[in-house]
Image (cartoon, rainbow over all chains, first blue to last red; front, top):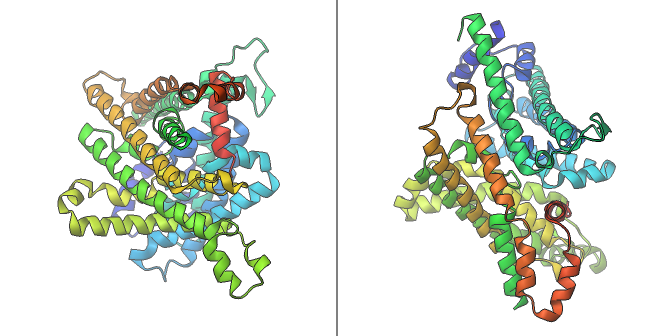
Length: 224
Length: 261
């Protein structure tokens, strides 16, 4: 309940740059559910919709985002004192682009099929709003530990969001989970779930469900 | 004649069949965020089309003359210090992401400055959207698609500037179509009684799903047009290579774009 109140307060805090900064542990916990990048902040929707056709590619994407976000956040945190305010966005994007290139080459070398399947969505991590947003909100203001914890927390939240959508789409679309059959052979594959419209429907309905659970919980707390 | 057919097919494919928003999911952020009313949506669409064209021009030029193996500028510069056979084999495509994102953000800056100086009324109407566009995935996506079609093994098949620009312009047009339709629907949705948890982004996404289903109806139009436009003697060959059903075609389209990475 403390956390629930905090995420709302934190949004205002971020805008006002208040003196009290969250500790590394708070940063870590906030990223997972209270300040979930996908369901709460609606950031980085491009991979959320595009690579959630099956669990494997969704988890590879989450791993790539974890690496890029962690490295970029730590680097930005280390150089935050020499950063010029008007150049910071350019520095952020160039840092992110460097790490995305590393991930892209790594995937092409060791997971060639996955790299083919993800296609342009790996390079598109560069313009993923989550990473720029975290560099701006946390990396450029707090020390390395807070920045690292924040990156891991946010990435876990992102991975959970991707997993929730990918699980629904893969099970309903193909009757399989991580490539293993979980529904009977007679299951009529809902092809629409594996195609682009399925991504919109699944995410829209899950977002509605998330808001619904949220409103019930806030009624119980008496805070909403 | 073949060239015109090719251009025409690229245009139809980018604007309708493989719509940037509804098929590739790029540029979702402005699609959800700036689709509250039709005027703003149209402004955003125009701004994106404008920037995407300039970014495509820059990225095609850089890719063709600097990045791909055997590119003229790189070979010339390397030829000053290296022996000729080594100089022509230099491959700078690994730097492409950094170069593109740098090109996009600087071109957005320049466009903003230029428009503010010379077209103040236009700047007023674009104003808010121009800086936002730097982090719009649609721009980088267009650059990456162009790169994957320029950096092919066979130099004969590499795209020229005309094809690259057509892809960019009609990609932008497709984005504008999608966002304006969405804004029109959302203006009507404001008057409806929507369950509270679904209000805002959730209902927008579900509406977008239905729109995406409508746009799926265009699948296969490019094959049909190709068959109709090609001279009869070539028609046989085209039909043989494109005899798959619509869903397979959609998959192929995805693989084709992903193929260059």
